[in-house]
Image (tube, rainbow, N blue to C red; front, side):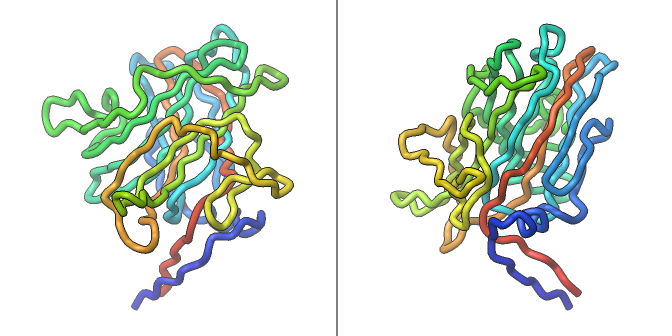
Length: 262
């Protein structure tokens, strides 16, 4: 018999590492993404004639997260090489996936970025064009929240590195009594999340988002006294003939994780 233990969200480093530890589920047939726990990397050259896609998911379920995206070796040859991003509200049943994604790519060598936010449902082949929305039989469905790669600005660092933070958090809409995801793309240096899912700096100071508009708000049908938790994933695609190099660092997750024990 299995017993479900609930472990409250924590913010100390050791507990945050535990929250992401364990065997994740991968859908990365070309093995583009490496890493585990809270840190992942990509250094992949796509020698094929089609876009290569992949993701690595968390072992446990969450209701939000903040991820630091570092694009490395950004130059005129590698700009717009592909997308790094965060998948959230990820669910798979009988090989069919649904998820939300914020995808980011470099637009120039000075820290300029572009991004999109969408929800995909009925995904049966992530390698198919646009996750399979153009399949003739049983196509995936896309709901677009930010289209055509809107412009954004990352933080340009040394050694041609560009950094930005993707943050998605599930919050209750008081007027509808349903939960919705607020999605942000930020330059603030995020240290971690507090127990309420709010962003804080590495020295514990709150990051004020009261005057910051989310780049997208994604409604759900989730109700109840607690947010519905689903898996997260780091995601990448690399365009044909291009090389993408970068890292993802989970800065924190929101809410509880569950562990099945015999």
